[in-house]
Figure 1 (tube, one colour):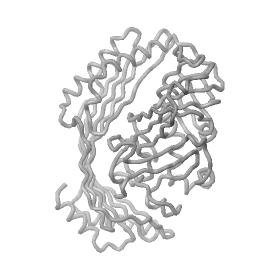
Figure 2 (cartoon, rainbow, N blue to C red):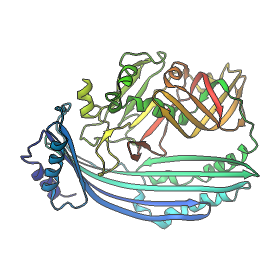
Figure 3 (cartoon, one colour):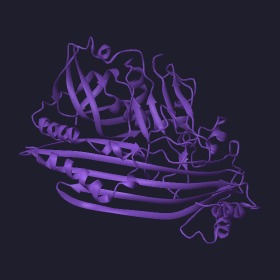
Figure 4 (cartoon, rainbow, N blue to C red):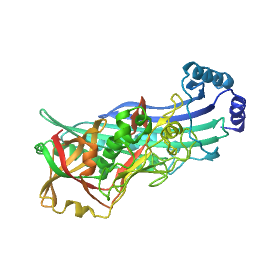
Length: 458
């Protein structure tokens, strides 16, 4: 976007009778390819242009989104009028310094430079590998990439021009033997690099073979087990079961959460540390960015330090309400939505144990990997693991049918008694909240060991 856009936005914000006003203008483009079995269900490109104004006036928030950029002044006046109509007690925003910056995209092999035909040719290979595997009845391949170029400006003097390119791939296979049906799959993603999509033939073959092998795998008897979680499942656990509880827009509206998520409360042993941050553990993850959708610089937030809750995730409004610092976690999926508090890269910090240390001494337990889905309700969670293996006398043995893990997140955090030193980040899929999905995030963990984990058959 050129200098004329900046001039138009700054002119529209000048002299507005409101406590605070911000403008976001977004250009986007995307490509999508989806297969069901050998059938190509969707292939195409899309693009969009739009923006929004969010205003704080008279104690209320007003919001107006638009696709026509020709009369920005009118959109600003409309958002301010909406805010005054809402009204209410004065809303404070945590102070942050105004920033003027331009942020180019993180790029490896730019997916925009790869033709749709070449992308399809890569995916064709994976479809053929899975559908040619004996016992596989169907498969699914879904690929998306998207560019998002956003200009943000506010009445305090900030003007941030950011661009990002996101890539996501999901492949899965379904096997059938009579009435028995099993599936296996992987989700992968990248910030601006198509290269990870290439060369996945072995992974596609592994997915197909795993689905077939699950048909003959034994069922695990439900009960409490010592379990070892791989980094993918452990990352999903910390994101879904704990990370969402750390989002402060839920905390200040829910009295019970205010008590449960009170800083200083102990949730685990001194070996347990959990962080969230838009620049950690590296700035090239799908959940990474330099500035959030309020123009606040992303950073690093300690959520649990040495087993004790020490932080929450904030927008400027929630930080002011709870008397804490803003953390740069206000995010919107696109210009049609106002920013809300969202995670970025959420992970369990590596410990000092080796992976072998975690398995040692387990006479009869489970090694659970990958995931299909799950649900949370306050502090209660249920997750379905994608794979499960029996552990006997410290050794990983036979493949079992997928299992479900459930319990209370705080009890489960207390029962984590081993954390390995092999952090890995999961970048596939996206996060959903308040109708905004899928938002690019990353989550991760080292291998972790949990005592007395409740297991049921999936």
